[in-house]
Length: 162
Figure 1 (cartoon, one colour):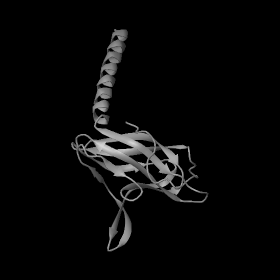
Figure 2 (spheres, one colour):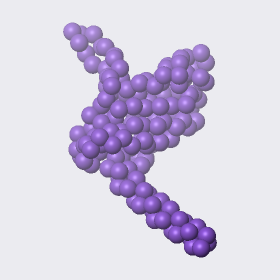
Figure 3 (tube, helix red, strand yellow):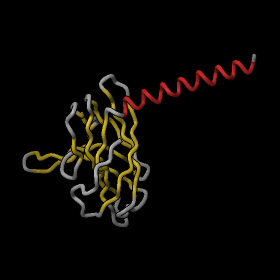
Figure 4 (cartoon, helix red, strand yellow):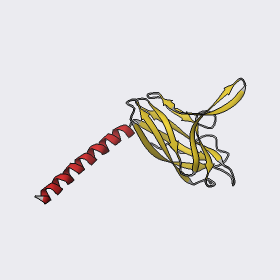
């Protein structure tokens, strides 16, 4: 009898695992992350930016980002106000359905502050994005961002899809 319970438990666990995997694929399939990269740093530099293009098929919001090499990671917006470029942290970035949202050096971007190490060209850094879907579920997506030269301003890598 005990062997039957164990077998039944294993079968149920396998079924639940497969169901959870399919649910995760459905959510992850909604969001594509293209060309994630981070601007390299020089010794002693405490902050840099991370950039990418995010497309949500059904509409979502970027509500957080984490990075193990930064003490603080924030979503930022840069815009001109009265002839002055201003940058500020924002709590969320809307991802309209089917429209790519570019995070680049002169607009929306991810700020990595309190850097724990220098980031050299050719390295790779994980970024964990928190995306809130229309149904209010939150998904975490981890991508590897290539560290590019300190002077990089535009993507040159082929697109990466999640």
